[in-house]
Length: 273
Image (cartoon, rainbow, N blue to C red; front, top):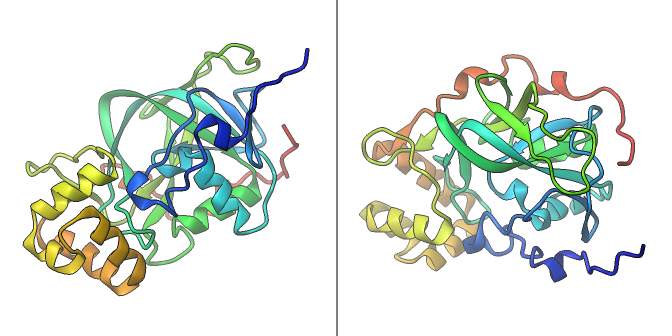
């Protein structure tokens, strides 16, 4: 039977790239699992991919358009399985740094009783290297480190969906996640705050800090424009979060590797799903 559905990102409403439109961070996520293949999100025939690394997508890495944009920078066209999962033990917080992309990104924090739907992206070694680089993992002063979050501390159950085979109902032994080396922002009581979306987040941060408004302007639009134009200003904004005592630990720092993260990259090249 012929599938006549238009599965392009544009037709599915998934084409906006947060790197190009920072106020729309973290971008639009798919409604169901799928295979990102170039400009299309295709049906997925398996939920577990043993020869790939499972990476928990907390922010824009769950946006197909953002993933496509990152891979295109390096000429990588191989497909990426994106699998919806029920995740227990992780909250989606606010990174304690200002990104050069013009936004304040999401970052995971430990939340033992939290249950939410997130995506696991399954990356081959080449794709994993690209995402690592985009998160600053290889740099000694990069914003994120890649951590292995084991079960049962973090429970990740891939979700069964119509037409999916080979992995429905499976709880993974663990996943990778990008943990912010700066920590996360708290809610004023020391508890990590949840990321509400870019525009409301920037509005709240600017209202709460005269010094931040002096650096980045009084509106989310001004914040994004100034951050994208000045790397050193982003660094100053990151330092200001700590100076104003807005930062707390995510609770996941203990999972960051002492050795190089490449030690966990699958040795084999992946087969095309």
